[in-house]
Length: 446
Image 1 (tube, rainbow, N blue to C red):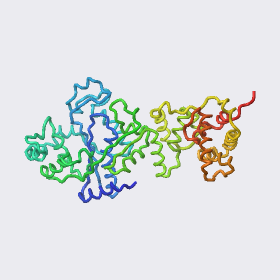
Image 2: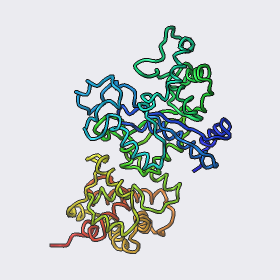
Image 3: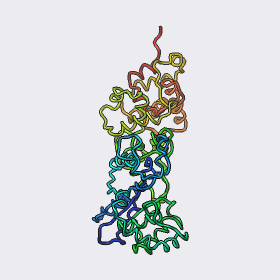
Image 4: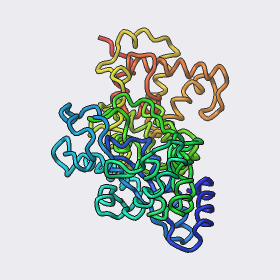
């Protein structure tokens, strides 16, 4: 998909570097779970890099791991004894679970997997390696030699740019631009105001390191809703891996593509996820079963494989069905789950008036004509039309609309013992013909 904001950024980058390999950069600290807000640090440069490559230019997207940073706090879920490691570099701290090489790898590893699922390719750089190998030595010497000028830029007399084995952040960032010849980078809006890291870095990279700053885009925050159950084992903010349990990779990418970087993004893991999938399906013109339908089927059948196969009748559902299963199991509140009656409500069936009985009989008589979601939708909305002397496909009048609501309420009461529930056509399809006949037919006389 083409996105104007990425195309405009690519124009600026190519004008800055008309001939050589173009470098886009991202930087992330693996100090804890890497959440969906951090993902924007990757996605903005990635989308610009894709646009640049689509024009036939070579582009290198760097992911600089800030793994030489000291540990400053312990995420939720990590044993308290790890407080002893506060102040040590992230690569010098053991994995809390004892499985990987370091603390840093504990948080890098799931993020790498998520990037692979999203189709994002980066070249990883470890700041631990670069600092300890001496790769930055010349530029560090330059920063130290110009420390008085850096202090003047920062407005902090006596400022020391190099301490504890590395440059301070506001000097480290522009130093990397110079070392890696960065042409494009993005960062959060908190780094982008006057006097912020980017503004100061722009002066430092020009006046100390003699290099022009990269083309830059500030990005806004990524918020989440409906994620109360998604805190995971560490931290509280949902991660890309969490999101990919419910959202197809292409759709998660699209959430970051469709908004300009300065626009905030909200990812909703509640029932608004249905609207998200519907919007995506309309955009792509897909004819696969909707996520809404699959989630309803999983809910109504309590995840029974045999019933789900019967209802879907060979329809292509991968990987969406697995994601719908995850969503129902992990996100659908217990009080909102659908429970179909095990036995018909004989008293309610016996008390139906003539019009109600006629509506149910018409539904039962004609539901086999087109046993599909589209066919049941047409019939469910059409039954009140037929009973009022209209054709099945006539547009509803206000009187018919009211009759449809009454008919649906009757079905919910008879099938679920509730006033509302999933969409009626989905409910009918999931319950199945034989069970509908049991739950909606006139009780036999004793």
